[in-house]
Length: 77
Image (tube, rainbow, N blue to C red):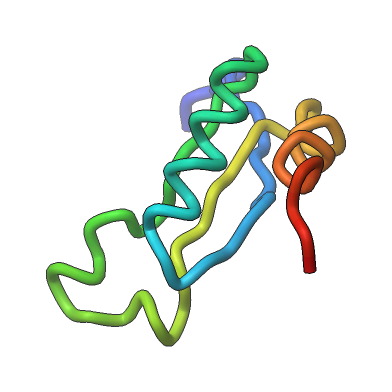
């Protein structure tokens, strides 16, 4: 088994049924120097499950708290 010392755990910072919300959040994070990954971005076009499961935006564990505050900074409930 290969030792992967470059592995960095990621956490889901946002879940949404709307891809545009995930993409806007990803842009906010990118503008603040935080890398992120959209999980299941193309799944809806294949099997149509985004409204059930939602799209997920993941960030590295060390950026999670900062990313969460950036995403929710101007969000109203």
